[in-house]
Length: 319
Ligand code: KG4
Ligand code: ZN
Image (cartoon, rainbow, N blue to C red):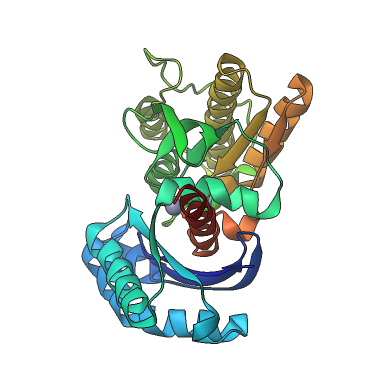
């Protein structure tokens, strides 16, 4: 039994969690500075890192208290060390380093994208190998995992990340930031077959491109006098087309690597329509698809602590 404290500060969330043996989430405390960025239409790195600095200490304290453990019952600390906003990352890394020195605990650096993959493994038993799709505000990537030390990048976005495309399309439609949840809500009232949007083709089959579809929405909005109903149709058509492309490429990657398991992670996986679209396709193809709980889809430290435990275990076995 091992208790790992996880710390995640790669963007606007300051999160700390204690996870037992890579599975049991004893506590997870997350504070977001999102409301301070909304008026700028996106994350302002300077504001994000300042807010990280203001909240990190209280968030970590609270996660440890909620876990019911004493400091001396912690066995390791895991912290997101890349990729992310430099100033924000530095706050978490410095804090984790100081704690690891003072408590004499091993410190593990965890990749943010891989921890998003691990989020689905906190709630599900998933056997290796599998394909993982990461769809967040900063990344859209397909990976092949033989285990957490043997990860191959199959493809990624050539322009916007998927979440970023949602945020930009939301802005074009006059919705506020972050746009992903707003588009999901609006799309519920719209007809997804009304407009024929398409994601651009890419030279390599597992890369993605979202800038073309974003521009198509922009031109349509400019050309038409759009009322509330039509906006909902645009949101629904855009969303459907993006999810269709994500699913096609992900299942194609499964076929290419001869695996029947697909794991999805990153903020966009909070979208229920995405889950429906993937679950339906997986059923048709006789494949399994795994999602994190909605709560653990967004940035959080439980996934960091969970992956940290696995890395520590592997490292100890090999030592
Ligand atoms: O993984 P995440 O929390 O942060 C990054 O690492 O980027 O992802 C945030 C992204 C934002 O672009 C947001 O608009 C998108 O995830 N997102 C969604 C939904 N909830 C969040 N996109 C579509 N539908 C949602 N329900
Ligand atoms: Zn993320």
